[in-house]
Image (tube, rainbow, N blue to C red):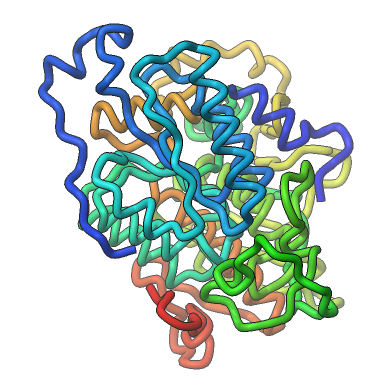
Length: 433
């Protein structure tokens, strides 16, 4: 899925070091304006929902922040939640933080959301568990940092946007490449016309997921498997989906349609997101999606109304996550790497260019700053929704093997009743958004 010379997710992370209603955090301006060390009891109280491998990275990224205090963790696996409760308590004990009153551990995220003293949540669950907790968190008055890809379906993505807007919440999508200077530089050049009119974009990510066919395995005590499945169909336990306890790898639930969209949504929520940023499509998207047919169409192709063609797959000779091809040159970007043709563009005074994009050097700090200012962060929920929609559209074209015509304003397929039934899936039990 990732090129060998691309930074791993862990390296990159290290570098960028239900229905209960709660009142939002409202503090006097004099409190927010006070120095951080003068307001230990007014830090943002944060809870973490899902503390697997990715959740652990996020927890470790927010723990040292002087304006944040982690007060609760939640996971369906007993070992994981108790481990991370201990991790948080040991951290604050080492810091001799007298304002810390302990870290609670919950099996059910609804109990965490019911706490009126929690101001913000991290959601790092499997993808099929993003939408319901995020919508419930918004209704409960919490600000939200939710991992990418934003949702399992296009319908879920829009439901998340609506809940965040209706409840005036701050929402950061975990597409953290927007906080990497290489991507900011590349997209700044593209948006300023430095390589002329954009004709093509190439995005190198993996393919779609498939239906789960894993065999049944014995389940051990300590895991609430029914709650792990949540809105997904009932199926027997398999450790590939939810390895027990604390582990250091990324489980392959990403490979199965019940829970995720495969490489198209996993890495696509990073690199298609950058394509959208460079094209100025943060509130729009493609209008036509054509799957490969083995004859004339060699690869999945997205067409935009402005004439740009976006291809799923890298540009030959360029080992980058995203490559923009214009009438006057190219811009190539990947984690920690940026290349432009002509080479003179590499020396451009980016801060002096007329069109300036939102700039962040730390995705976590940017979220905390947005909570304080009540402004949108660099990867607001609308951006996350539009980027994951590109990924979902690609998967739908692959799965159903036919051309799709999309209206990005209405977020509906054009004159295609059958395709419009694919915008959502029926969730199980009470987990409907």
